Image 1 (cartoon, rainbow, N blue to C red):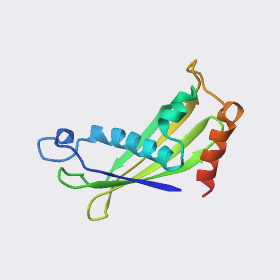
Image 2 (cartoon, rainbow, N blue to C red):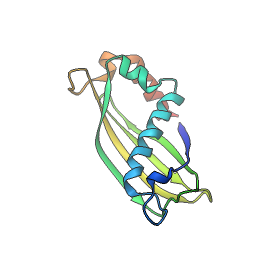
Image 3 (cartoon, rainbow, N blue to C red):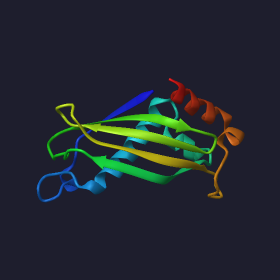
Image 4 (cartoon, rainbow, N blue to C red):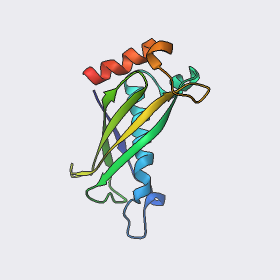
Length: 137
């Protein structure tokens, strides 16, 4: 499954040249992940209400072209790897001209309330099945 989010960059996210600062992309990735969860029917707050968390253990980004203030960006998000403990999301960021301007991935680990890695299948099989289904589509 592919989830999409449209973002209108804020002026505060720019540098002096009107280009979106590189530090903003991880925030946009997080917005895209939260939207992905919403799109599959599991809003992020519902995950947290069940005492489950996700911690990022790896992030990689490639900047291809600048994003600019005054232009919308579209982020396509896909789940590309999934296990009982980890998952990987891939992101493709496009500008108004539909050119890919950035791509990246994040790897996350499920955590319990004790902040220790959690086997999501063992403790929340319904969440496991929902995410697994997205990987298969």
